[in-house]
Image (cartoon, rainbow, N blue to C red; front, side):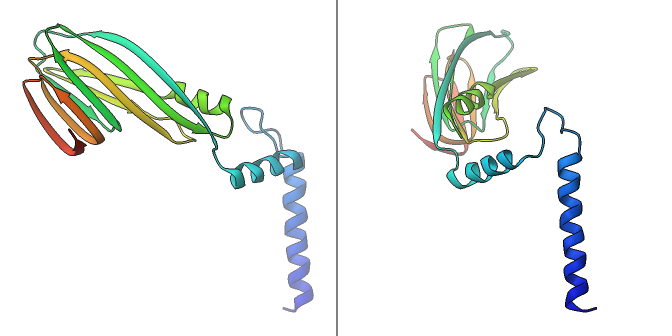
Amino acid sequence: MGKRELLLILAFAVVGILVYQFTAPPAPGGRSFGLGRLIQSAKREIQGNRARAEHTTTTTARLDPAVDELRVDSIARVTLVGEDRTDLALEFTVSSTGYDEAEAQKLAEATTLRLDTSGRVVSLSADYPEGGQQSASLKVHVPSRLRAQIRRSREAHVTSVASLTLDSTRGD
């Protein structure tokens, strides 16, 4: 096969792709192909996620008297404060990056704290959305009778709990 034939095959492939992109129905969510969208996507990739936003959620959670252990997993900064109380007081703060302020704020708000109770154990972890880069911090006021286990955290500050187990965590 000669050079001329290879160029013809390549030209037909490029024309076919362009015809398909311009005539294909819009993708779910209303996104379709367009030159402006292509330029915007390239610009976004080059510039990266420059904007930052932060979102804080505070809540309390009822705690069954039989619960005697709290597990926290995959949250960057964790602060546990043991107190004379019967519930959990949670302050969950997320910092997120995004292409612009609106996207960064949307991603920060989309990050959620998951609280699961299984028998005598309460587990706390974060669910992060796709896109951007999120970093979460959690401050929890807990009953001082609880045993605490913190896994995969960059920083941990713990006071007045019954016992503490740290796994892949550093901090005071």
